[in-house]
Length: 233
Image (tube, rainbow, N blue to C red; front, side, top):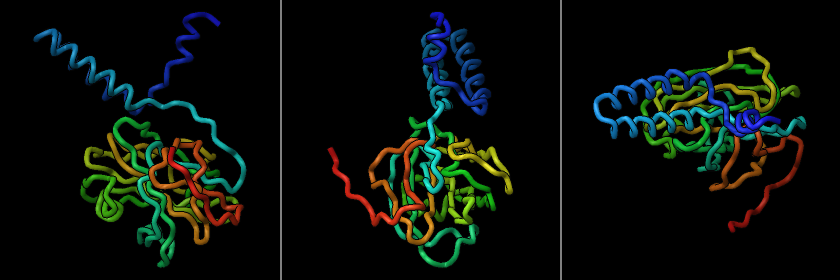
């Protein structure tokens, strides 16, 4: 392998969604260089950060049927039994919700938690509270998915805009079949993703744990495991 190819293989790809933002920051940097060079260097730092934010690293996704992998990078901020959003039509009984908070330093590409079909997509406008707050699930702008496994099990997934995030972007449509770990959308600049597990399914992650989209297993539909304990160390 040549040195050029070796260096290129170590660089993390940038998602095309970020090109306009990176280009705008780069143009602004050039203007600032013309006005006063120190400002131009500050612009370069912001341009580099923007490219970092829109990075889209490849992931290795477990492929066994029944596994539910994390749809987002970030910290598991809460696991609770709550009523799912009404627009998802997942019933009127509380379900286990796994909430994953994405800071501005996390990868913001969201991925399909399993191989299946997107049955429903529902967008709901709202406010822009801190996405780490519990009430953000009800009050913030959000985009909800209902996904169905090949065995007919329905799972809810909700993208929630945060305090800084002002745009939820989806890459898929209703009726579309997706693979486990396939890119389904993104949220710009700090946000959260909620996963509503089917009744009786226990999460295999704990609050405070870090997850990787498309890789970290958060639940298993094919196990009767009553749960796990975790040691912080």
